[in-house]
Image 1: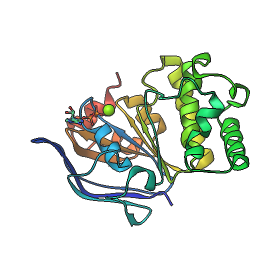
Image 2: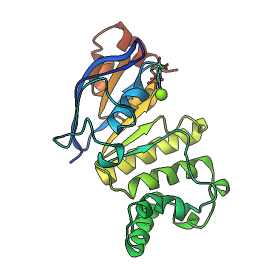
Image 3: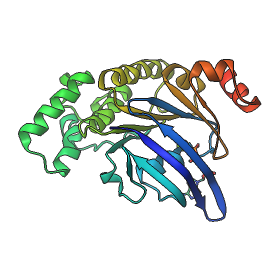
Image 4: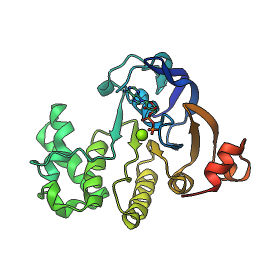
Length: 238
Ligand code: ADP
Ligand code: MG
């Protein structure tokens, strides 16, 4: 199912090796957090996995198959962005159903999948509203709903909560963790927030200047940091 392996993956923009070389194994069902300071290459790495950027070198294996040259739609992954990217003129129902309509699914199938997603995300009472009639948290749930209906091998989140206020962020953090427990689907979650990383992750990947400083569970990183960067980063929440 949703295992992802990166072998010697690199990305060069112009003369700038943003990601010199990364090896990483993500197991099916794991909740993996990429954490690191702004500009360290988190989004780039996620976009390489999603296929939104081409690798400069190396190999991406998804579910045991070489996916390096597959287009995004063929990788079986769903990405959730920090800007919700909802269609303002469509209802919540329309937004969630959109990827299924694009895939040519039958109406009965679409209706069932949308209803299931709405139930999981507590959006059942809001299906006929437009995005502007929703709170920030509800909009983010719609964006997640749109990812869920595709039943992906893995979800890729790029700082999905950074536009929300602090209280809502704590709520959504819990909701995404609960969603993971319910769906048991692989999730890769990018954040620069140490608290999010420590509270949500099965496995944390600490990135710095396009390199992996350390991979481990929150407790491992906290108690046995490999170096001063990891110790400083994990030990000093902002
Ligand atoms: P993060 O998500 O960790 O903040 P990014 O992956 O967005 O970091 O960026 C990592 C580095 O790559 C930055 O130095 C950024 O300026 C550079 N970068 C990202 N995308 C591009 C691009 N399309 N062209 C040139 N440089 C880029
Ligand atoms: Mg980013």
